[in-house]
Figure (tube, rainbow over the protein chains, first blue to last red):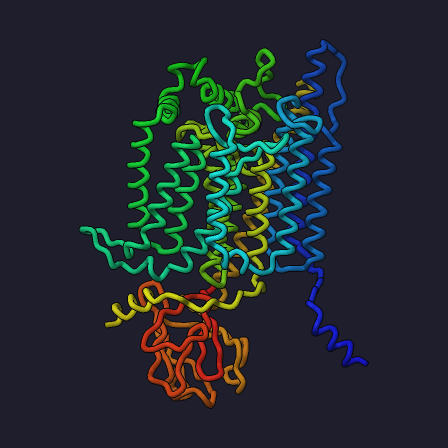
Amino acid sequence: MTSGVVAARRTLPRIALRPRLRRRELGLLLVVAAALVVGSLSLGATQRTLAAHLNGDTKPVPLLGLANPGLLAIYLGALALAHTVLTVAGRRTDQILLPTVGLLGGISLLLMERLPQTLAGGLGGLAQTQLVWLLLSLGLITTLAVAVRNDAWLRRYKYTWAAVGVGLLALVLVLGHTVNGQRLGIAVGPFTAQPSELLKVILVIFLAGYLSENQPLLVEESTRLGPIRLPPLPYLAPMVAMWAMALGIVVIERDLGAALLFFLVFLLLLYVATARVSYVALGLVAAAVGGFLVYSLLGYVRTRVDIWLNPFADPNGAGYQVVQALHAFARGGLIGTGLGNGLPLIGGNLPIPALHTDFPFAALGEELGLVGILAILGLYLVVIERGLRIAASAPDEFRAILAAGLSLVVGVQAFIILAGNLKLIPLTGITLPFISYGGSSLLANGLVVGLLIALSDRGAELPPPTPRRGNRLRRLVDRGAA
Amino acid sequence: MDPAVLALWVLRLLFLGVLYAFLWSVVRVLLRDLRVAAREPGAALGRLIVLASPSGEPAVGTAFGLDAIATLGRDVNNAIVVDDDFVSSAHATLTFRGRAWYVEDLQSTNGTFVNGSRIEGISPLAFGDELQLGQVRFRLDRARP
């Protein structure tokens, strides 16, 4: 009878739930909870004082009280739930990404509570809607971190993923509606989705598959162009295709930010896969040529660059957003004005248009100051460090490039929009990961972090290698050996 | 100073302080992590994991750290001794050239297989590929830093 039980156990798929304590994650989550409670107290006290001041009350107001206890409690509960699920699942995965992302999301929630609630969002206000998206994003992270045990479905169908990506691009072309001159979103019923957020994940998956498969060929330098050595010409095609795709996004969808993000991530991954500085240099030259072309041919690109070079030429018109953001950073100074104490509405309008999606960093810079935004930059650096560590300890090239790409896509996106807000580079309308308002952005970045946590599992099985086709490879190798 | 204003200041600074407390604890964990990784022994170029070995020498699950050149075979003078009846005394050589691994079959009696197909002469070996000598199967993994 015992042997029967054993046999039955062998035939069943093994679902081994061995709970494993995650002490580091728990400790860090406690710090996150403390930070969010203190932030909420600070916001509540400031808001109450301001309200009393506006009403002309002179008697002291009760200071200690959370800004929006319900929302905060739900968010912290969701973080605790995610931690519990990961503990029960018991995989040996990364314990730092969840608290870091949880803190970024919490800061986002505080910011959305502080902004006028009528700004956007159908579910009873800005903060409520953002909370719902944050919860969905946390759910996605947890699900992927528990359920993804195998990456064969990612690596085997890389051309299918590429086709899905191209399809998404085409969908935007056909169904896209234009916001502020950019063709970014597709509207499905009451929702608008931004496919470029999903597209960046698909791009990383495709590039990881392509570069890991062709890595030996890409480092083969058989083509020589003067002093520059290039890989075999057919394998240059994807680079040219990427360049053309980035230009296409700029020209047709008028989305400068996504084009910049995709091309930078592509160059970074090419470097990760081949360690050839010359390819990156070549890519940068191609980007410079492309940049010059779109600058001289497209009016809206020229406007962006002109605003960047001198926003004060038209401070109440074209340069308004950028000028107001600079003023916000200046008002913030070293330690900021305090949460909730930033500049109030000007005549019923936000001081900076599209603050909740494109300029959250300016709002945080005003209320938390230089010290605060340096801490937030530090959080993004932690995400990148974790991703690169996961990449470094990955067992094979595909996982290494995938992990590096997933963390870099978040990091580079944060860098592009931060630099845009600070007028270091021309402003591009992409979101700040985990802080900007918006469902597409939160879900896509949740997908990224969930996959990263799943990939960090050292015990996860490698799929069996697929038999190699490469006749071309053999020819090249024979030539090299001869 | 007005106690209310003071309380607001304290809360503001406390929030910034807790943000840095989080960063500090993360950085401490990361540094410890890096130190542990630096202490782990491991070859710089790659590792060969034994997947299947009917004779038990090498044992399944053994991980060999690889130098730039590693010879495989039944003879005890090989870098990796494979004691299997179907393996020649000098069976194959693994070499790391440029940025990639290559395997060369040393005209062994029963051949060397990469991902199930028999190789002739030199063949590239990517990380994650399976290498088979006789009845012994290996997988080439990236080295852990």
